Every structure is written in C-alpha cells, then in structure tokens.
Image 1 (cartoon, rainbow, N blue to C red):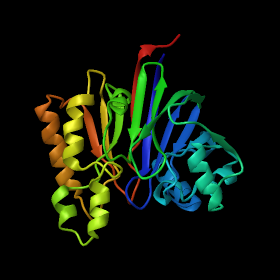
Image 2: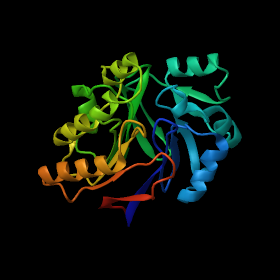
Image 3: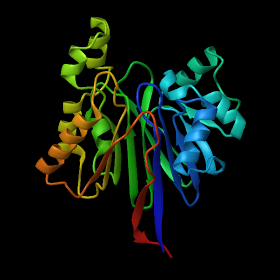
Image 4: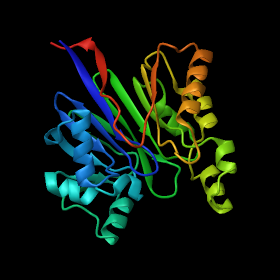
Length: 267
C-alpha cells in the first residue's frame, strides 16, 4: 500500500513557530514557540493529535521557537531534542524539560519512524535545521538563517517538501522604524533570509522530486503576505515549476494539513 506523511504549520513568524510532522509510526513537534495551551489549541484546529508525538525537536533557544518547550514536553512526558548549547541556555533560564536528548549539529538519529538529519545554520545562536526521511519522502526545514552555505544547500536540494524562511522585504525593512543596528543584524550573516534571497535560492534547490514549498517565518512588520505570494508564483513560473505546490505560512493560525505520498508501494 502507498504510505503518506502529513505536515502542518501550527504558526510561523516572529511571535511563534511550531510544526507538526507525522507518519504511520508517530509524530514529531518541531519547535514549541507558543504556550502549552496555545499549542494544544492550534493542534485541535489543525486536526493534529498530540498523543501521537514521540518527541519534540528544537532548532534554537529563541523564545519564538522555545517558549512552550518545558511545560509542553513535561505535560506530555516526551523528550526534547536539542543541541548541548541550546539545552544549556534553556537550563540557565529554568526552561528545560525533565526529559532531554542532546545532539551535536550534523547528528543523525531515528524518531517517530523518521530518519532525522540535523545541520548547522548561520544565525544568532547555535541554530540547526532538519531533514526528515521516510522511505523516498524527504522534508527539509530551515527557518532562521542569514546565509545559505553549500552544505545547507546539500540538505535542502531536491526534497519532496521544503520549509524555508522568507523573512523580510528589503525595502520594507529599510523603511521600518527598527534601529539601524537591528536592521544590520537581520541583513547580516547571522540574521535572516529576505524574499529575494529565498527566490534566488529556489533555482538552486528545487529539483525533479520537489512537490511542496512552504515559505516560513514571515515578518508581519517588514513583509507582506500578498507580495510574497506574487513573488513566489512569478519565480516558480520562471523556473517552469508551476507543478510545485506552495503556500506562505501565517503567524496567527495553523495551515492546512499537507499530505505527502510516497511513490514506493509498501508490501
């Protein structure tokens, strides 16, 4: 029979990030940037069952990714997977759950029926992205990065589904009321990817297996959902990839549940 993987964004942006990934074997919660109550509420809206979660993954310690980690994991009695540096920072803030599994950036491990590959990202802190593999389905997530190294491109290239940051419109950021030092940080090596950075990257990482593109971590102050949708649609047309589904993820509400089917038939 044909197998399916399901991916849902519970919300993505500067005020909170969380993704629910599941297959027949179980589910993973990637980032916990909302309170326990809000995470559970959004799971209900997205028809995601928290009882299926085998573990939670954390990309880094910023509060828009980690705010609910301790209470959520302790309530469900599940482990949090984080790098040693991220775990140490959470512990210093008394936000570390009881069950913790640490891994170094670049580590590979099994969780909830997925092979999980971690890779280092260029951001403020010890930040990682993830690539999930189940049979011939590959899903990559990179939501906070100031630049894209060749190693990161290797993980992102030709995945069945790609979740990639498209944080700001350059003109809107430059014209915003943010401090100059903050603008420089966002533009910088350890900041965030802008719309045109991401659009250019698509030409290097989309491949014949690419079916789904999700644009994440969109700034509400320095970006525009409609503008980004038009830009992405135009870019996919330029690349002759109108067959690749895409969606700009919202901050205030969950996405739909995206179904990704394996092309292999299992016995």
